[in-house]
Image 1: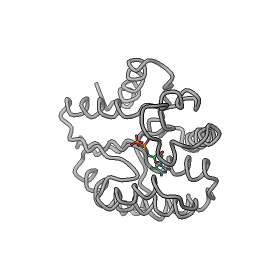
Image 2: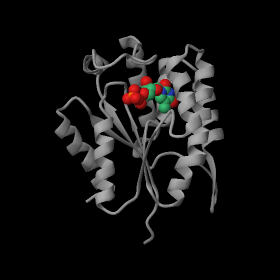
Image 3: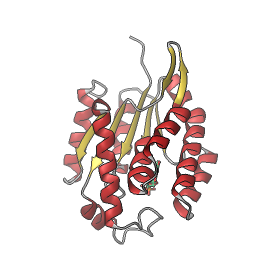
Length: 215
Ligand code: TYD
């Protein structure tokens, strides 16, 4: 059977601890001979990284923020994600559209119907069997209580616009991730991030083994 591209996203509130596991997964896929593209949102292209600096640094209303996030996503999809998937690579993406539903939707209170419209508009791609909305094959959600995430972040770095938000904001973001998971349960692997790092890694690896993607 021909090797297929794989699109994996990683989600969770700030401080949930995604990064080390993304790096370890890249090495695990490479050890099996796969070519891996590791990327992030907002960002992943020159243009999208410029937009990221504005999104994370500048004050703006929730609609402006949602539009900029989706503009960055469009560029990232067209320039990086779709070409990598067409080359049958493994794309490991630190955050994708679930973050928009969780942060701009649930966290900031921006209209979810408009986000659904933008998701369809920005992520529609042409395939051999017709148009489809590009979404990850698997989304790994690092689920961690907001108070524990805040403790982990405290003092580690200067907080950006989102990291500086109060606990109630992150509770809403967390609820937003839960709603997205409930709407597409088969796409999600929910990982209990309130464990030692090795235990979290064991659970992450198990999710990929269940899919048959890693030995
Ligand atoms: P993050 O992924 O945590 O990167 P770092 O580890 O470098 O801080 O930061 C990205 C921030 O952007 C995070 O606070 C969530 C936010 N974000 C949105 O608000 N909407 C989105 O659609 C995306 C992709 C991210």
